[in-house]
Amino acid sequence: MYKLFYHIGRYVLLVRGIFKTPEKFSIYYQLAIREAVSMTNGSLFIVVIISTFIGGVQTIQIAYQLETGLLPDSIIGSVVAATSILELAPTVLSFILAGRIGSNIASQIGTMRVTEQIDALEVMGINSKGYLLIPRIVAGMISFPVLITISAFLMVVGGMFAGQAGGEVTVTEFSQGMTEYYDGFQIVVMYIKAVIYGFLISSISAYQGFYTSGGALEVGEASTRAVVFSCLAMVVADYLVAELLL
Image (tube, one colour):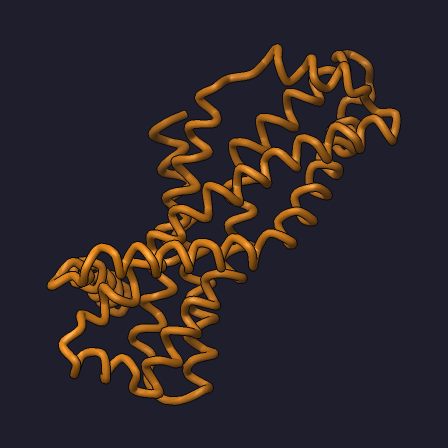
């Protein structure tokens, strides 16, 4: 328990320290855009594949549960859309992105730490915390909503075409269910989750990398811890968002 509070306190101090003696805005802007493009492009392929198949699997399984015929087939569209927007696209996909993006951030910064590049930045009078963390945190808060938007769209489209191909539900019935039970507030919740998860994954991963010590083995361990603790933080945040907003 002591170690938990120790790491929470050091994490808070690290996040607070990024605003101390900041560099020029133009420097952070260029770095953040570059990181955001890298995160988005590097994760786009896996997002497309996983989201499409998750949507298809959803439709098939929901149709199996509703095969009694007591409910209209159009209900499948509403359930697939709601679950994709509220939970599967923002939360489940973020678990995957934690492994792709979070481990990458931790390994990058961890390698800079063990090779003394961070020490060199501090010797030159640069706020290493701000220089390394701000662009990655901002990039995470930009790229996650973009990736999750693509994911939600592809889950719905994948579910729609899987239902049509398998004969469970037609495209017309699927679309009817989506429009009848559509709630715009679900989109708001999805983007709130996306921004929160982007911040948590990027900042926690950066924290693990920033305080790495040792060599290559410790960098690998920091990457693993980054994924584990990011996922734990997302679970807690997911519950709090659901409790407060839904």
